[in-house]
Amino acid sequence: MQVRIFDIDDTLCEDGGKLDDSTIQTLLGLKRRGERIWFASARHWVTTTEALQDPHLYDSAVIATENGSCIHQNAALIEDHYLGSLEREAIAETVVQCRSQLRLLDYWLNGKLQTVSHSIPCGTSDDPHREYLSIEDALRHIATETIHMVHYLLGDEEGHWMPASITKAQIFRYVPSDANVFLYGNGSNDLPIFNHKSHASCVRHAVGPNVDLRRAADRCFSTREDLLAHLRTI
Image 1 (cartoon, rainbow, N blue to C red):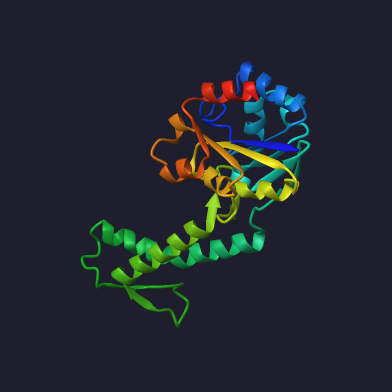
Image 2 (spheres, rainbow, N blue to C red):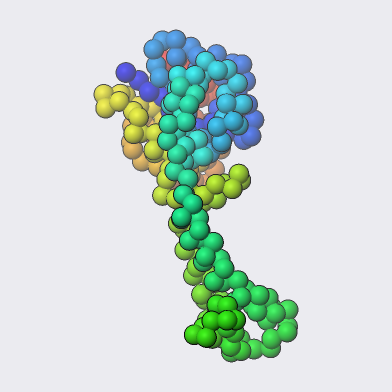
């Protein structure tokens, strides 16, 4: 059994574009020969299907969308990794804790407070035990909390939140153990699947300076057209 997992943008089409008919027919030809054609994209489900255009490409495929945050099979969502309400409430609480510091920090940045040694309060005004921080310490605290959240979380454009540890490699949970896997991509978000070291190929013109991806790839194609020409000879 052979499974071919494709990135979409800059691998099968222009970034934000759609597959042309030649690409669609090439992939359908592989599928008719019994190969499994799957996809792993940063796109959402709707824009993924819009890019693929032909339902025959995705009606029986396993597809990782939003960089592995959602897994679809047979055009149905079977797995997602959005954070739950309790986790989102914890994030909101952290934001509230920083809010008073951010407000006074804005005063300082606009010249209303003259020195970084000026003490500012943490917490709410009705808290008798609230601490006072220097502007310098407040800056450090805000930066630390922000970096922590950015490293742990990744927000998408629809307002979902998911752990940053989730990657396109989630799709490998559905690959049969006896499958011969071929991977095709071009960006840093493809590294997690390339690092599984099946048969990885990148499209060189889109990779640019991404040395790690080129090193992880067994083969680089100069253009998408070269990749498609290769697929037609398989």
